[in-house]
Image (cartoon, rainbow, N blue to C red; front, side, top):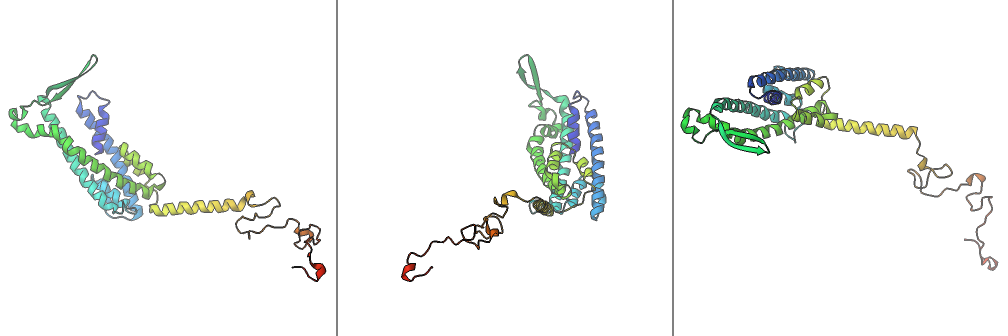
Length: 290
């Protein structure tokens, strides 16, 4: 499908009448990106030990092989290879339908007439279409007229939407496997711009892994960095004014320490070691403390 994307992009730089130039530019751009993608998949499959690496160089099967190389991560608990197989089948159907659509355009173009016009100030835009009696005038081209007027809106638009959703799932699993740190960005760029082959070539030397293992490794790395930081940098807020751990600091017993215990007061309230506890008011009657 990238072929038609490149052809549409080249249409912005031509007068729209030389369609063969658009197709030529689209074919060249598609060939270049396709070669990059095929080489990238071939290298990845060789490193991972996947079989049938020749599929990387066959159109449509190339899309399926993206799912083969990204099978370590599943698409919403569905095997990535199965989703990629559906995507490759839809891609073949879409390509055939688009070829039929463009052929019908070329066949009915000589019979187009002005059916409506839109005015924006002094500028007039004419809308062309087939006359109502076209099917009667040219019954041999009735199928082309139907394809020209209805094929895109009824079939191609919806099939292309389903194919795009499946491709998002396949590319997301693939880039989660070989570019987990930037998988969302790579997937988004591949959908907006037809450059997925270039991105696949860039990650060809990366080691594939499960995304869950990548997340676990990142968490362990951050935890080790935190432990190293706390080991080398004592937290000043975990100590009181006397340089001892706070009562509520981790590992403390929660009891208030005596700041003058080093003077030998025996844990009494007086800093000089005298017993300043109150006397028994009934001491004269033969009582005793406590």
